[in-house]
Length: 103
Image (cartoon, rainbow, N blue to C red; front, side, top):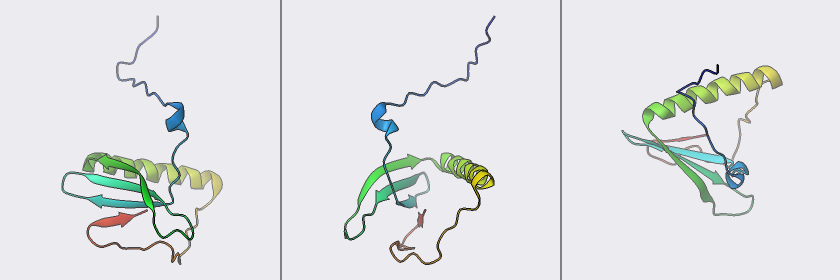
């Protein structure tokens, strides 16, 4: 007899969504009740960039996402070596003012 897990969640991924959206800049803003993650694609020589996707999370889910990313980066680095981030990256401003973070 098969046991059924009542907590199982079936997730559907359409072909269009599976293609993904490339982003090379993320801007993170927050209020007391939500975090907003804006994913942007910057192209060399183009002075204007558009937000390609915005994800809005509760603070609790933002913290869970942070933990999940930390765990996955650790697993990646264990298998592939340390991810190196260049110290000097003049194409990406570090502070836009206000309660903002960048990734």
